[in-house]
Image (cartoon, rainbow, N blue to C red; front, side, top):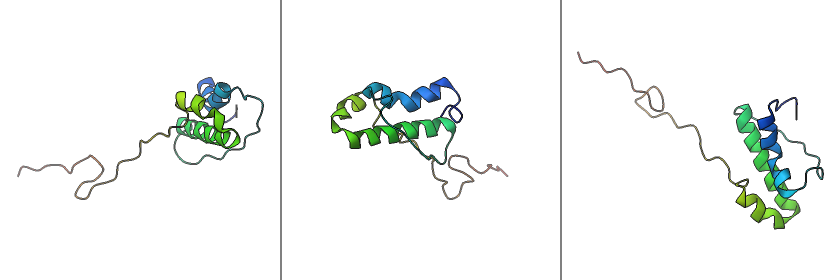
Length: 96
């Protein structure tokens, strides 16, 4: 993990679910994250670990929920609209 998530803030993001539930050295984790940037993947791994902890012990749910670890990031790429070159960009307006 230290090789892939090089900065301490990303490592803290990934391990936050373990620290909140006090299960730091209880599990071995193997995760594959695809797409997005390194920070987005860290958030995705944090969500995956939180959901996996719930499968082991449902009593952890209030603790994880209170810290916001069970909420996924709803932001997505906006779709391209027809008649435009992109999602928001417009074709250049010509007066004459």
